[in-house]
Amino acid sequence: MSRKFILAFVIFIFTPCFALAQKDGRKDVTLELEGRFWFTDVQGKMKVTDSNDVGTDIDLKADLGVKDENIPELRLFWYPGKKTKIWAAYGQVGFEGDEDIQKTIQFGDTIYTVGTRVETDADIKYLNVAWAWQFIYIDNGFLKLGTLLEAKVFWVKGSLEAPNLSPPVKESEKFVFGLPTLGLALDLNPHKMLNIYAQGSGMYAGSYGYLYDAEIGVKLIPIKILSIMGGYRIMQFRAEHDEDYARVKLHGPFVGVTVRF
Image (cartoon, rainbow, N blue to C red; front, top):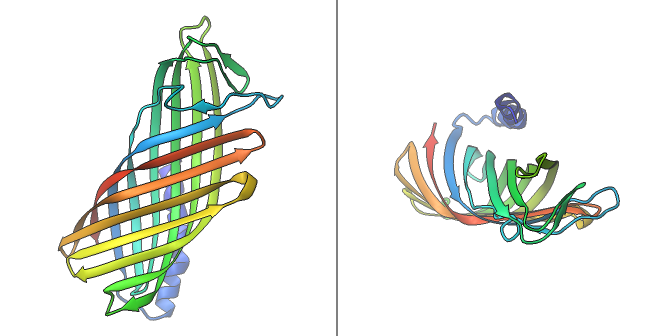
């Protein structure tokens, strides 16, 4: 995805929000730019069939030797009021594997026989836009709790290549998957230098699949314009189309830095 597309998407989402803030007479708008690093453990399965709906259930780690990778993510937050926060997030990761496979695999129209050296390349990009309305507001913000509405879109591309065959064989597939999700967002602010939060959302879409994402974290705010953070996050989605599917689960701790404007 190009940087221009990402910028245009964020502007498109946030322009109505800025217009609403001006209409309400709000002058103090807080922006935060957050960069984080997510140390993930990946688990995944997939199946891509041919025209006769024939394919193999493939485990990314057990069958293809795919390794864990860490995910950088960028988030932009806007706080138009004490009970509302809106943000957009973008992340991407590439997974690789190199394995002499221990079973025969059919991926699309290509069959890789047992013992064949297979190189795997899987790329995932995702864009998330979220709105939290924490209408339960207690003790001047010590506790904030409310609804969370998110929209996530994933771009997934996977390829299997047998470079030692003559000629080399390569099969690639890609798909786009997206869902709106509903959930809750909780913030605890026991001190002006400490924020503890938890949030999660999900959605089940029947035969099309499902998606859920949850995290818990702590922010330390040593100075007004800067915070450091850490926590734990788990995200899983399954996209289905007829007999084809891809299921990916990512979980692990994360760390980050937030700059306020």
